[in-house]
Image 1 (cartoon, rainbow, N blue to C red):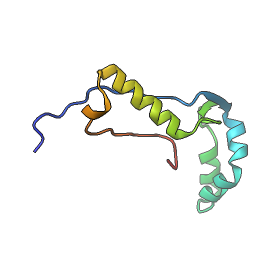
Image 2 (image 1 turned 30 degrees about the horizontal axis):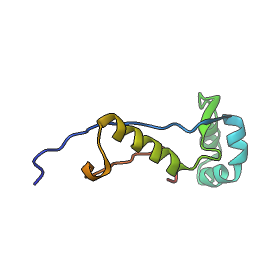
Image 3 (image 1 turned 60 degrees about the vertical axis):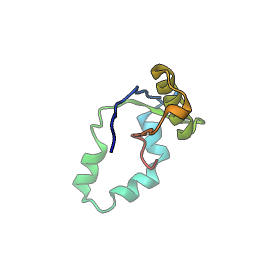
Image 4 (image 1 turned 180 degrees about the vertical axis):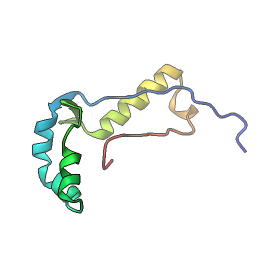
Length: 98
């Protein structure tokens, strides 16, 4: 039974590098084509058009683990907690495949 549960702090870390969507799409072309292969021609076209983004943050040489560590460290510092006082850290990432 949990007697006291609360969120002590939250934090986030955004990948430091920025790339154009076109560059990312070109680099990931094979994976994109594989993912869209089951769709009909019109659905594939619709999926690739009008994304509404021109630039996105990418990890580059920074590893996702580094971002998780940065966010967790910031949250602990903000909450004034040390490791022995932490019972649970929940990491939620929007990076696909992680």
